[in-house]
Image 1: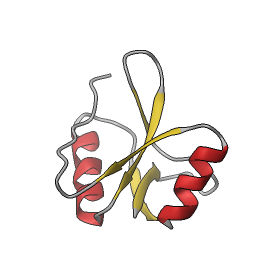
Image 2 (image 1 turned 180 degrees about the vertical axis):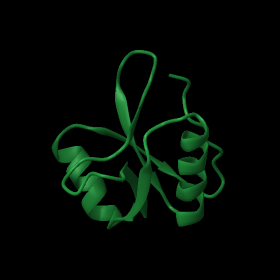
Image 3 (image 1 turned 45 degrees about the vertical axis):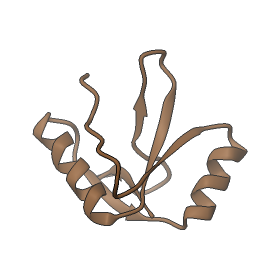
Image 4 (image 1 turned 30 degrees about the horizontal axis):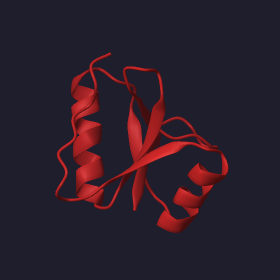
Length: 85
């Protein structure tokens, strides 16, 4: 599984999508190609440079649940586009 993080960031932190009500959800991509494609879409919208990081799915999900963070698993069947800022 793969998540996105700021290119210059070396510690903790990951890209999360904010919905209309201000809630944030971590996108966890099943496929690296889908994560890279999403990064390209963000860069086209002049978003900060992001990198794709491989993570252990179980650890990522348990961490989200431990801190009560929302998360979304993006499968190869899903089509996601970055929200307009």
